[in-house]
Figure 1 (cartoon, one colour):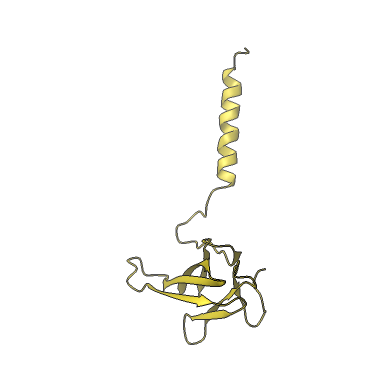
Figure 2 (cartoon, rainbow, N blue to C red):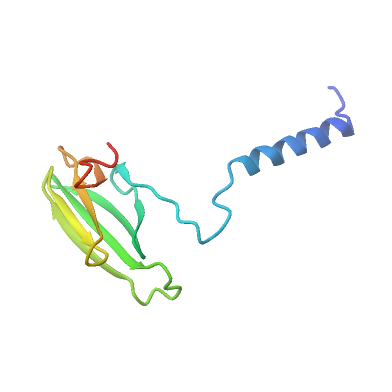
Length: 128
C-alpha cells in the first residue's frame, strides 16, 4: 500500500468540488428547465407557454398515448391556479393546450404510440 499525502487528498477534494459544480442544476429556483420531447412513456415534457407552466407525460395503452397534463400560472406559488386534464390520443393525433387567447402548446402522439413530442404548428416539429 502507498500512503496518500495530504496534498494529494486536497487536490482530489478540489477536483471533486469542481466536477460537481460543473454539472449543477439551474442557479435559481425561478429558472424553468425546458424539456420538449420527444419522450418515452412516463417521461415528462416541461415547458413554459406565455405566463403558464406545463408538465405533461403519457402512458401507452391499447395502441394509444394516454396523456396527462397539468398547467398553472408561473407566479402562483400556492398552486391555486393548477388544472389538469387527461386525453387518449391515437397514433399521430395531436392535442393543443391553450395558455391564453394567442398562445398554445401542442402535443403529438408518436406514429406507434411509443413517443410524445411538443410540436410547433408553424415549424412542424419542435423536436423529434
